[in-house]
Image (cartoon, rainbow, N blue to C red):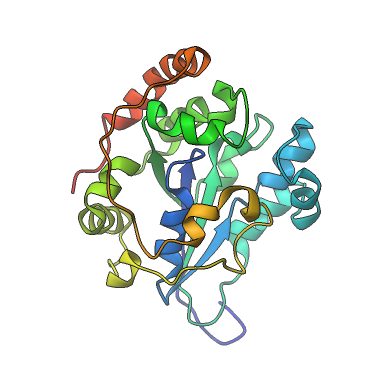
Length: 245
């Protein structure tokens, strides 16, 4: 119960994504609902501080968020939502969940998973982070989270093919009503975007909805082709259960 007397139990959705999976565009779709507040990669600072990895904007990211995962999880699972909001949509990167994180802390959330064929996401990801690894993409962690919690799986290619159908199916599975306003949004940056937005969000900042699906073949250079092959068993396990519109 909040100080305003509101007693509705908020719906807290954890969307477990990998990089370059339309995760930010999907966050835009949810943020465009008047009943929803969004949280952008809340464990990113913790992940960078714990691993020492050098990501674009590393120092700014660490300064912008708590670096203790326990503090982050308490905020995600216990804090009241702003007045008028009944849904908290959390955009998570699965590789940010390191082994020390107690997954039981997330048990009360409604879980969903956003995936993309690694052969299609790797060219985009490699333009920002050279020489990516399996751990960077979070697919193994995503599979582990899905095995533990279950929940609907959305393939980003399906989302591009049929945004209305896939989002309607996702909302139904999460037991929330579909809202037409999820299909389009104003362009530009959001106050809710992480400080890493200048490095990653150029495309989504110009978007006003989900773009067209392009079924062009993707040619990967040797190292990326090898990484894609390493990723495929994890992707295939999740894709076998994905939502159909």
